Length: 258
Image (cartoon, rainbow, N blue to C red; front, side):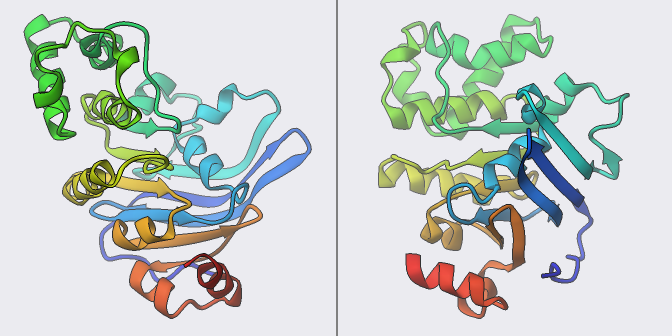
């Protein structure tokens, strides 16, 4: 089904007839979808429907998987991200991905966030500290770790590891933020913090979030796209899609899971 009319704000990300295969298995089929600045786009659908594949295509994480191939294009600010002249490392700084499970790196709490800055070329110890502090404050974990920054990050709780991973992504000031199942296994307080943060970040970021939690999609997105078996069934304003879906497939999926 065709996507709803374009939002007045210019799309920052556009998938144009985008398809993906891993070997002989097709994971995405002819996706036509856009994501705009100032909006949060939730991707919903059953496991294996293509949500995570779509996210990982956008920052080219799938490039590292044997047998991956694609057809069509993905535009970021009107430029094809597969253009041979694209610096993939720079692209991944512009398009930050927080996956599931959230990653904790070897080393201290501080190093887990600072490493991203150092890999991006930042050399000033003062600027690194300030950006790490700012990142940890954004995700509301600074007060809990400021006196233990040199302790190993391996001992943190699952919730705190997500906050740390999110801080590591945010310190690079990405234009696009990708979240893959961000609320999985987390307590209500952290999920609420995350959703409040996304509300703030949408003013300056393009946000795409894949989630199996329909209530989270309903609460924390402006538009929702429903995927089934690698195809985009429909996309529209979240409230309309959840209350008056155009497709019977969407209606059945929502009804069965709410």
